[in-house]
Image (cartoon, rainbow, N blue to C red):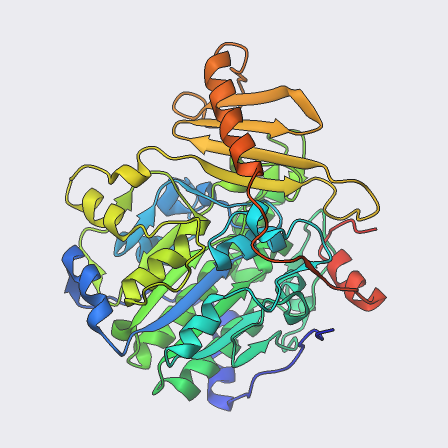
Length: 466
């Protein structure tokens, strides 16, 4: 059985001083500009042999709490600046509201029914091909820095990484405010991820690299005094935490620029799922598949600025993320079993005002969670949703007569169930789910026997596990 990695990065004094200064002061890091390029240059990135990849995953980040997605609060000035000069997908769907299932789909470009990763002991098997493995084969030095134990190496998520580390907490939690209603305080903070990232960039700036950062403080509603801006309700605390993560993202982007890497690094920012605040009777995530937990950001920042930035309005999904990255890099055939699509043709078409490619207009996009994912002694309890613009259908296998259908064009908050008013549409979308359910897992199921210590690490994130 693989062991959880809990190792510190090599620490360099100068970087540590800089990151401490970031938090100790009220200084706001602003994302620096790059040279202005054109959309047509996106298709020529594949010709470059010096392009790095920085992959930023913000755990528990719902899209509609970012300024660039229309939020009225200034939670995300740095991310907003990146989106304004890059490519923002306005309607992106995560494949689950639970981290492990969602991340397995994101990395493999396959839906949960195909990955088979639906319950807490499930892991990614060795025969799965993950992006880090593919990039390593193409000469990238690969590193991952994470704080969420659902993506630890013992669940198979470390495959292909030269270094895959959960940094030791270098900053005391007593400096932070943490009041997530569903989780206990998590040691350390995203400042540890940022510091490790900057140190990695300093050490490996002269090598072609793939760096994956998994930020966690939005999940924990954790932030320090520099982000204590919005109030004291749980939603306010969540927004404060987003602002805190945004500061960290801005600092990493500034480090890229200062090290001369901004114009040879492709940056991608995504999330595994969002967060609910009782819009549908529950708080948190890993419980339902409504818009507040499924609509997540996806922003691509090329190694040049786009003026203006591109906004893609067509529905896309996290399963499309890595097919798109590999297409931009010119790595063909990387994910032969992918169910997601490269969105490069879609980006080019929408940027130029051309018709949407037929593969995208429209297509069903699925999300899936086993409501008993934390109860392995219980039988499966699958819950599915399918989005086909502008509709989302919710279908629970144990309650087949309680489907919910919503029209996002007039009901974006999913409050008016119209399944009874549109029975033919509901039946057609249910048939899409039935077809989705017929897919066989891509590999034999891999499960891990977890120690009580490992189970307690996961319970500390707020999850109920039997």
